[in-house]
Length: 234
Image (tube, rainbow, N blue to C red; front, side, top):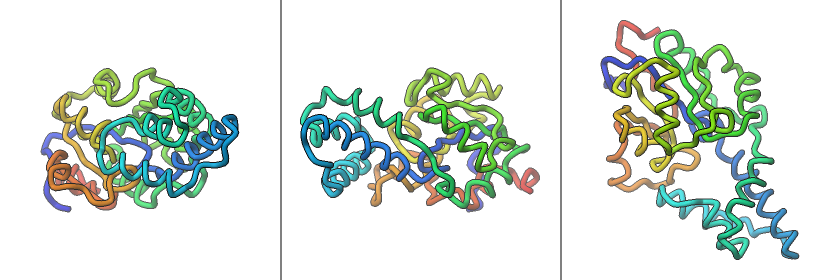
């Protein structure tokens, strides 16, 4: 990975689920929430294969409400989407050992050379997890939706992060694993975009999907080479 994405980058924004932590943490939380609601309906736990079918379909589409689809198909009522969302939030944690191994090397390579911002739809507890796992001194702006009050894909969230980082869109790259909540809204505001193909990214992206971001990567290993000018690399 040697092509410089933009020569004047000053900041990198990072999603959390997928780029930093294993998205199976979210899967575990939503499965627990589904089983709770189904138990109250007098039904047994959701069949994991049925869950995966819905989950993988939404991943492949890179659009639409996952919780809405799960509520409709596995709870029998799309109107239970908010209930499912609220219950999922209560169970969503990032246990020790679920951070991807390439995260700390990447952040150590870019910190001090780029402003590093978390821009993620996450619960307050993620702050503790990120500090526990060694990111506390490597992040400059903490854009956690439950704290900030904005959620992706809203332009307000990205605008808030740009203001906090003190950078312009054309000086910034956003790194995420979804097209609908990461790549598309960031590109609409003029940010460069990196699509990380893990977690909620599809297993087999289409050529049209692959053409949307500026760069597609399997993970964060070596990504600093595309973000830092040679003089700024460690």
